[in-house]
Image: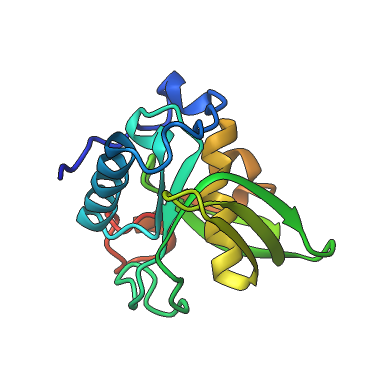
Length: 181
């Protein structure tokens, strides 16, 4: 297992479209090692999620959830630990919800981002079994944020009101600046 360097905004690799994970990779040792490394990396920084492109791997793969209260999001409900491969997100309705987001690839900053309040996400688990869930709230926000990384989007690209975007230490005095999403 290994903790990888997380790419930072400005690195062109974060702007690429990730490639689908092939059926041949499902269940492979390479995929299992990548997933284990991603969890080690996410846990090392108390992340709520991580996308493969954030560690330089050009695959449509995201992980999220903690199964416990995340110290960086103490008021958020727990999200089930999930490995999601080749995800497809479908909004359930048009209702959006604004919320503060940070990102491990955009350290030290936070911004208010609109996201669909309720979504259905589908994809595959590492063993090739189907995942199909309909979720809302924080769970939906985390999935949308992580899946944005697969299409070359970082959350600042979704901020609509830049008066609600800035340095964590200025916006939230007392909150550790290292506590970004």
